[in-house]
Image 1 (tube, rainbow, N blue to C red):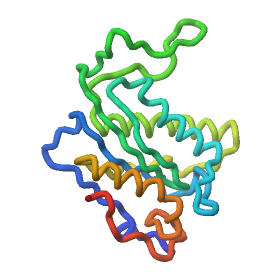
Image 2: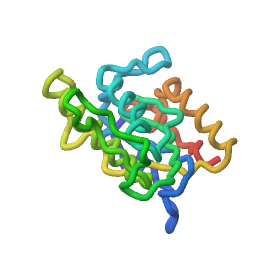
Image 3: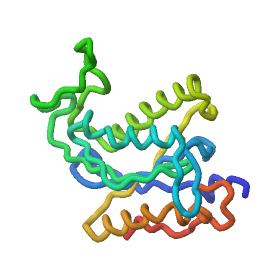
Length: 203
């Protein structure tokens, strides 16, 4: 199936005037540039990650250690996109981490990894996730022969949805867990015969 931007584009529902630094749970979808399948494949209704996919997963899992205002919840890596729930617990002034939190340090005593930052917005978190995974993916292309990408790993934008209530949170978690089983009809699947038209996040 030919990629049709108008048909396959996920519309963001960012609310005008909404403060995306405030505490809350947010569902995000981030898609690769050109919907390139870089992170593995779906086999028997399950996602089989390659090394790049495992790298994406490890970056996601590691974000709370670097950013005290960020918690991560349900997460799934698909061949050419990720779905994840980011929980902002906000609480510290921008750029001033809690006194009892220090970044990991290497043998030389130098800080290793991103410095912890408080008061981040959702877009800050997504930007840093994209930046770190892009750097690691580019290194994988050079050193490990990972498939190259055109101009960038990720599309410029991302889809987000503010999760309102426990019921909505549970439905989104369930939908994410089932995502590999629906890959044949996923709107991001370049080979899909019947891309999904429903929007399960607005529940």
